[in-house]
Image 1 (cartoon, rainbow, N blue to C red):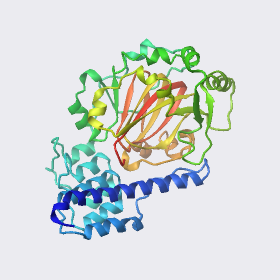
Image 2: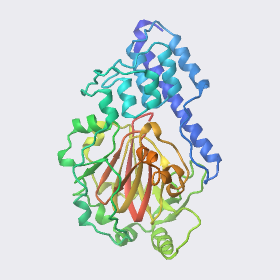
Image 3: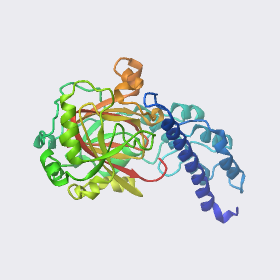
Length: 408
């Protein structure tokens, strides 16, 4: 590699690390596909030394110093993805975590993810080390939150839409900020939430959406009753070796939901709709406009729009992915949130997940899991790789958008 190939070298380093992450993710999904639905989930493997050989060879090539921009970018990416052994390898080559790689240092990235293991690898952080936004490492670890409001005005305009909703009066243990779109600038969103890896409830961002009218129970069945949708006990069931099937919107709403309402005991997790094609095929994507700051801040390569509808007790097992938003249109959704460093994959229904169940009884678990309620009209932003599981209270209809910006 010659001196003029530094950019190509950096691309090779980044590609090597991204391939490691995809390989680890595939290992986790493959293992989940091979085990029973009742078996608890798996966290992304931290140690896979066989996958480090290509990267190790790359680091031996050329005359690039440990303090080069290329190796610093590689360390920051490995830190963001939580690749412990990769970080360890880069540190052993002399790459310094206090060197800036854009807006942040690897120290700040690890602190934003609350990744104690990687922070321990780095050692004591300089107290006066600031990132481009003027934040210290300690300030990101402290994760102070501003809470503006507890409810969204839009929810009052669409009380039920014909769906069987349940009112919830209990106070949740939630410190996630709730901020009006009117008071949120792009700079604040990037500084305090995207790069700080903090979730956010965005209020008063759906006031002009007509999708609320289009997804009332009778209207949805009348206009889209014959549309085919994917149903399963968990999202992407086919990816994890579970059974998923297709039915029409009419069949799900007028047969399954009605039958579910009359039953008192179920042996299996409830089925619900989690479909990536329905929103575009039904043209419902023309009935709402996402705030532009999501696209400006996240700069996605692609987006995936998802339509979600389920009965009381349906939900998603613990998982994580690229940055995403979720908007409840009708009903209430309970979120179980975990910082990126403690995120994991599971196939278990939230009510059967020992980690989530433990959050209700164990004080130590309470520190690990944030439990939040989302009501109609509220948009929840989840940073990349932020762990989450969901549980619907009453019938719940929502839309979600994932912002795919590469390996995350």
